[in-house]
Length: 127
Image (cartoon, rainbow, N blue to C red; front, side, top):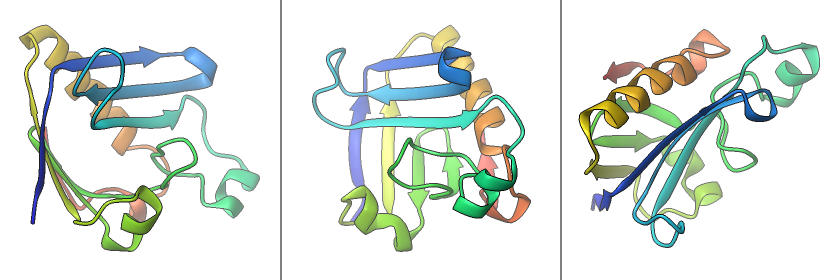
């Protein structure tokens, strides 16, 4: 069964802690569902590669967990569901924000999901 929620908050941070972050949340204070997609702003080094950190990340929860992404939803790899604490691999987020914020989020996601190992990137990206 698909997990659905309405994201009323959209944000992008570029450069904080050498990281690009694009997030959506149900509320300003972070209560409810929240997704924060991240990648480093530098090329992965040997240690990053050895630790599996050479892909898009969600800081310490699941690296490379996105199989498919569309503007309104994500399909997460079932192998990572336990790490994310999710009962179902399909998440649909309806984003209720202005067009400018959605476009900034979309552009950041393109960069994040193109980071690192080619074989860890989503097979289909509809942005």
